[in-house]
Image (tube, rainbow, N blue to C red; front, side):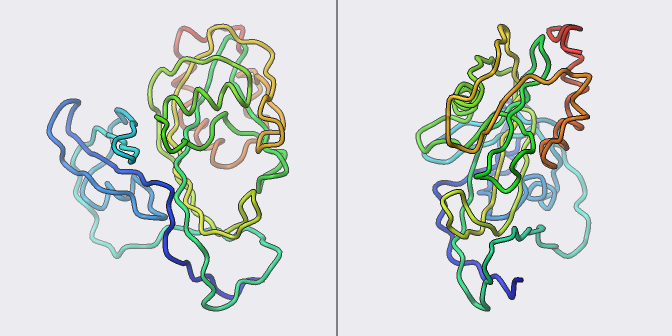
Amino acid sequence: MYLLVAAGVASNDWWMRIVAVAAPGSRTLLSAALPHGTDPHLLLSERGFRVRRLLSATRVDGEIVVTAEVFRRRPKARPRVPGRVRTIDLGVDIELGQSVPKRQRVAAYAIVLSDLGILATQFSHRTAVPGLWGLPGGGVDADEQPGAAVLREIGEETGQEAVIDHILDLQTDHWIGRSPSGEIEDFHAVRIIYAAFCQAPTTPIVHDIGGTTASTRWIRLSNWRRTQWSAGFRMLLDRHLDALTANTRVRRSAS
């Protein structure tokens, strides 16, 4: 049972900046830091832009800068509605006025395809969704580029070597919950999603033992809808997988 959560002062390891341009190489239309708990698409929408496609994600002077090609749209005249914040079962009450540290974590994940299907990872008991399946990826280290981070995570979690094709999407989630270390925190997850391809797939194996990944496997494209995905990753696959599998590099053997 929860009485009230009052978040404390932000203590982010780093933050993300959203840059909007009308076309690759054109002048900047908007450059704004991403506030805690805010969806990047909402940030752009409130300023009269809609994303046509994402161009890049790179670390610049400590910030992760995501550049989006946008087009103008008329913002709707309506009051700002705060983003949804989930409260995960903590096993303790949070008292009125109790301060909870804020954390914004930037991570990189990939929809990795090969002749064997789609690469999937299973969440361990250290997460809030043990047993469900997701995409390989994880947090971007403080000195790391997002693209390098997702390739590192793919290797650690699955033992596969992948090649990034392009940046695909941005996804956010915001909740109050307990971190893997046991700390209660106000957590803003910002996920950079890539499309990637594995040219020489092997039997996946988890190298990062004891982490948030319990198991890994290739899932045939014909079976992916019967797999128990976490809600966020299933939404990504629903949105992007059909277009990605139209790529001629994914052979019929993946079906």
